[in-house]
Amino acid sequence: MQKEIIDRDTPHKDIGKKKFRVRKAYTAWVEYDVVADTKDEAESAVMEHGGIERIEWQEGYHNDEPVEVYAGDWDPDYSAENGDFTKKVAECVPYEDNSTIDYSDPNWTENEFEWNEEQNA
Image 1 (cartoon, rainbow, N blue to C red):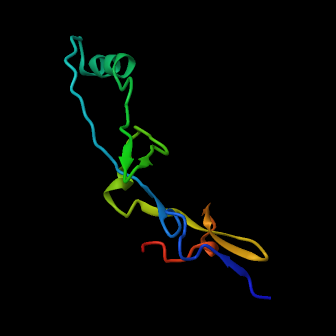
Image 2 (image 1 turned 180 degrees about the horizontal axis):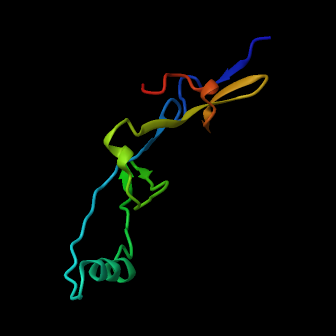
């Protein structure tokens, strides 16, 4: 049985697009001036009363689509020095069921068996 194909000539604008998750590592440091009797006491004072209060990640838009923060962390990430931290996490494909493939109905899928193109394309 051949499937009916709907709107192949005028597909939804997202069909064929991919969603990527990009990890960027940032290094931050701070120096404290502490009045103390010993080096250990100064380090202890910073551990108890210093640190990061808040990190605000910036979001925005690219081609009228949101650039959204998926996750964040401020612990040291020494693995950031090695490796590629951009990976494909989803692709927009036409809706498909047993009888039709509908290009006017976008379906974001995380199932790589449904993806039309390779991950890095």
